[in-house]
Image 1 (spheres, rainbow, N blue to C red):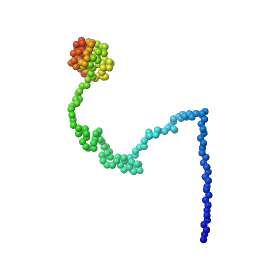
Image 2: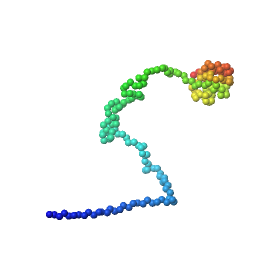
Image 3: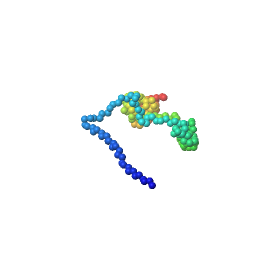
Image 4: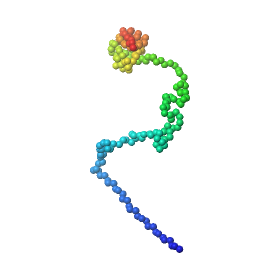
Length: 184
């Protein structure tokens, strides 16, 4: 019979890896940022500023295959689909289901209101829309102005406005002034 040879394995030593030692910074050396000039060779776009284009209809290997990111069948997968604001998939929209109430006129006149008591602060004999705007009593001199009879006026003044209430017109005349209506 054959005898088995016994082999003894010896441990192989691997060469030791030297660790690099970082130099210790002294107080005399100061780290200053180095200014780099920007040129065409070192320009980089910021991360996230450039998004990859979505290539559609180029097969399954593009990552957008088969339905080209449009989901499955139906109206939203077709070209030229159009929805108006409030579209509910063919169901009668809420805006058409709600009943109509009341009436809103297209010809409504909106006036800027000035009271007689406010006009006492103006020290002119003729009060125009420009003067009312300059004194901060109205916001827009070209919009309609109405004088109301709240309070009383002390001076005899001529007031130009688009409309006057009965009480305001009587108060102006009784103070010795005039109420002139501006025609638009």
